[in-house]
Amino acid sequence: MARRIRNSWWARFTFNGITHCERGTYALVGGEAGGFCAAVELSDSERDELLALCRQRLDDFREQRGVEVFAHRSRHRTPISGSINYRVLTRARGRCECCGAHEHQRALEVAPIVPRNQGGSDDLSNLQALCFRCNAGKRDTDSTDFRGLQASYALREAGCVFCALEGSGRVLLENELALCIADAYPVTPGHSLVIPRRHGANGLALHQPEWNAVVELLKQRREQLSAADASISGWNVGLNSGEAAGQTVFHAHWHLIPRRRGDCAQPKGGGVRGVIPSQQRY
Image 1 (cartoon, rainbow, N blue to C red):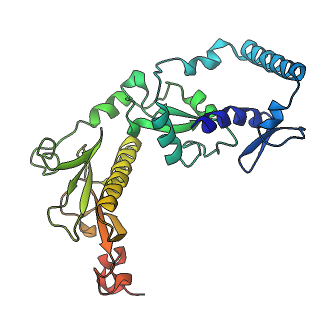
Image 2 (cartoon, helix red, strand yellow):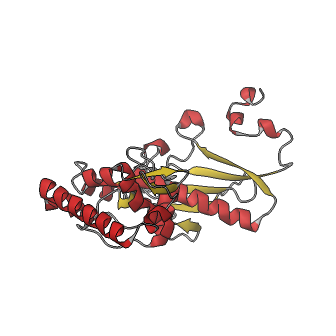
Image 3 (cartoon, rainbow, N blue to C red):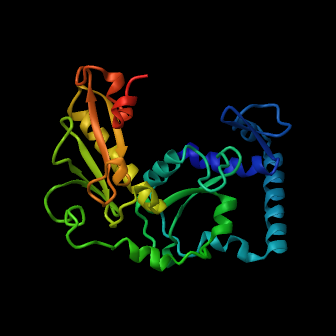
């Protein structure tokens, strides 16, 4: 984690042509030494000169753009733990989830999807990785009506078997926006369902925080089952969206089905292509 934080600052210098990165290692442009030791091997006077130059450039930048340019770093912010930062950055595969810039191109920051001043939380499902440029542009001025978005998460429908799961004792895992249960009619032992809390039939129309919440529980349940059963050697993960696709409960849900060697006579025909039997084999 310390290296990731250190890299993020050097990435800012890389973007501005002060350093360059090769295979994850940073060095000063024009420096003879490789990696971070390029900065360490400067003499005291050279280091002081470099620091003074950096401070001057920052002062010039503030004077040109105004003090508000850094306001997004202090408004509505509370510390996010290092472990949560790491999980968000790892989930993003080291890239800005807005523009796709790699962490070696621009420093990445962990920021809320729904801003805190619009009711957003610090739950993992509401955090995203943004490069410093996208995060600075986003600030807390997004035009989306987040108040309505936040309220929509509480939508439940009377008579829906999945909306009635909360507090039922069937929940195995949960987070702010989704929960996981064992399938009542399992295809294989360990067959589980991951279900967004908000009522909605279309699993492809989730808000981004809900996608994050669902994926997080799929991963957690997979790890839980793998640790408990060494015979599991594969997985089917599926969503039935629409009556024509076989959906019978019209509250979106994902199937996580553990697979084991020998559980199907023809494994090549036992995957998702089997939803249309005539197309199983190819």
